[in-house]
Image 1 (cartoon, rainbow over the protein chains, first blue to last red):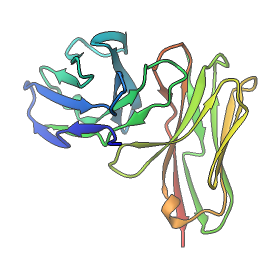
Image 2 (image 1 turned 120 degrees about the horizontal axis):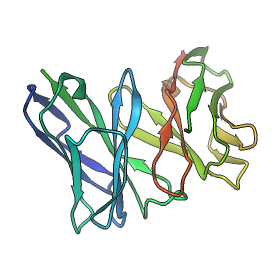
Image 3 (image 1 turned 90 degrees about the vertical axis):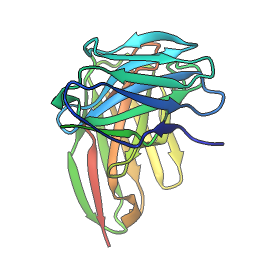
Image 4 (image 1 turned 135 degrees about the vertical axis):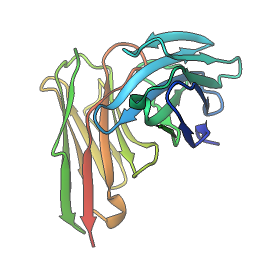
Amino acid sequence: KAGVTQTPRYLIKTRGQQVTLSCSPISGHRSVSWYQQTPGQGLQFLFEYFSETQRNKGNFPGRFSGRQFSNSRSEMNVSTLELGDSALYLCASSLTGTADNEQFFGPGTRLTVL
Amino acid sequence: KQEVTQIPAALSVPEGENLVLNCSFTDSAIYNLQWFRQDPGKGLTSLLLIQSSQREQTSGRLNASLDKSSGRSTLYIAASQPGDSATYLCAVISGNTGKLIFGQGTTLQVKP
């Protein structure tokens, strides 16, 4: 069974640009969550999608948005990039996204903003 | 607000030693706790998931315990190997959602 995949693995952008990251969950999983990891703040929750609907959202500005498609694949978009957006972006998938589900992470997308 | 703390931040041990990593959380009303491993520049690998009704889980040389009342979990690694070198993260879920709240991690180095 294939694991969680994320594309691209690496991205370099300049301030003010926008970026779209993609995540394909494990087959059969319907919940996808996104996290940002930085050396200073650690891992922080961005949002979670289930059945094409955003169910939970973390404390990030509106520049961070996402969506989920009918095949459970998810995309995350960051507009008007800032230097502080440089981070490893990780997505996690689980069966239904409820508290009893084990979550599985992808390899991440390393975003560098210059 | 739930906060998760991991001590120590870094640990260096000789190969073959048994070791314990600690995780504490401020709100004991958790649904579950999950331990992860992260290699440098990589994603997270799930090691163990402990449901709130469980006291411990075991997988190979790993054993994780959970004491909700005291707000603590420990990850025990037996007979450590250089391949165990990584950052170990614990995360809790407080509400009935999939939102994980992470500690800052413990970076483990096992010396041959």
